[in-house]
Length: 187
Image 1 (cartoon, rainbow, N blue to C red):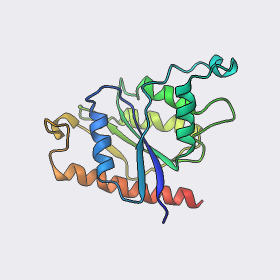
Image 2: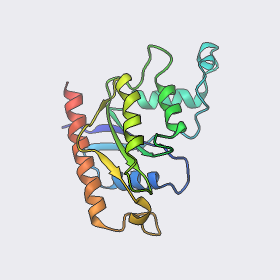
Image 3: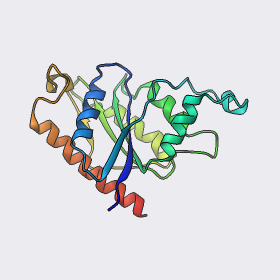
Image 4: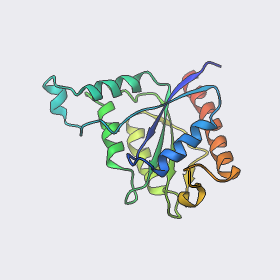
């Protein structure tokens, strides 16, 4: 089995975000068959097709599109904002799907870990994010699903998971994702 290049995209820009803490924990328990790389989205100007049409495409867009094209798969770790995923994540998705006919997401394996300090596990964000992924032909891992509720109660003062059960949950998810990426790559 060859090592698969996986991008980790965190849907929160907050320095001490729960999503970033969960993403770091997921990376720490991932199988060695996954080469994981955090992909920056905070420097991407809002999508405007005029930039591409006028030949003034921002350098950050070019960098981001190229990084996505090089991947075998992507894991999105997202908070839930108002029962959906954040605008910064939607902006990144749109940027890598353009210019029309140059969808960098096409055919990649995908996974979602949704995070909330509330009790519903960020179900809305997880399922809203699946909608554009279907259209962009990102082949999403369906099972297991990864919802992390009450995340603030699960992290210690260093922003790390305080118990082994949560890490075990993430480890199982990352192992399933690794198997998924191999299936998608083989097809």
